[in-house]
Amino acid sequence: MPQSITEQPPPQVNFPSSMPTYLGIDCGGSTTRTCIVDQDGTVLHRGQSGPGNLASTPQVEIERHIRESLDVAPPTDFVAGCFAGLLTEADRIRAIALVESVTQGKTIAAFPDYRASLAASPDTDIIVISGTGALVASNTIQGVRKSGGGGPLLGDHGSAFDLGRRALAKTVLSPTRAEASPIFWETIVELFGSDEPNQILASVYRSVSPAARVAKLAQVVVMDATRGLDYARQSVDQALAHLAVTTWHHISVFHPKDSTDQPSLNLRLAGGTWEIDEGILIEEFRTQLKALKPRNVELDVNVEKLTVEPVIGATHLARELGQIHISK
Image (cartoon, rainbow, N blue to C red; front, side):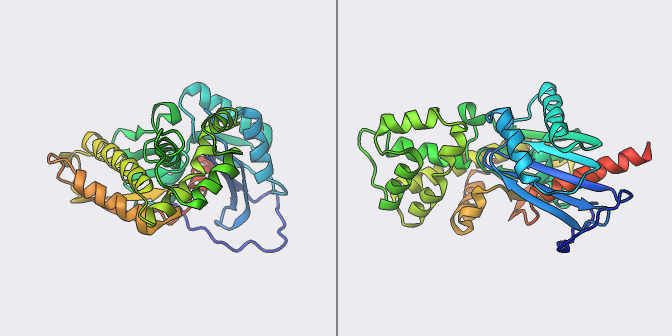
């Protein structure tokens, strides 16, 4: 079980060479976060910078963002880098080399980003992540399994990007623009430099990280949904319904009733999308899960927001790496 984390870094800390330190890196589609803890779980450093998706962010940008998030950080012994877009063994090797070039950590491992969320809280059975991208993952008797994802071209339904994409389709790209709030159009101009469709498309596709740019619309879309605007309500309902279907499919495949004695599963929500407005998004997701539950699935789910940051889960993985190293 992961040890607790103590949020009490003193103003100035001496870092003796005999004290092992553990660095967790959480690289997502919009934000890179880092956290360093010592062997007692005391936080020695926290940092944050821009996107770090291996599949959609240029490597030079990922490296720069990790460096920025580790500015004035102490040396580290064990590093767990958790990356959105880590899909293949070649990606894992590339991620390790990238982290090594920045941290000079003595022992480094790389994982998909959802491993950090799963490691953050020991009572989590299933994690539903919705940030720039979206996916479902869980620990099973066969190991960690994932559903959904797919990136902005092939999936990420239920993500902040998906909310922005659906909103653009119903407003900017529709021949009959749906009614939206003034702040929506102000945000469009702020993000893309214009409210003219071709200019918006050019801005999106010329962006270093198109998905992250579109995902920034999610907040104003949710605000418009709370105001009852149809385009926004439909965008939220459709995105979360798709994510609910993915969740139930994952449960039916990887958590059949005969494989567990539990009457229910603890489902935790992680990612920046859920932070926008818990009142509408989490409740709507619960509603969609209830409405779309398949008849052949007997298990219930207890849906709550993950209360421990995924980057803390990444430090747990780094500490596990240290324990494995010491035991050899």
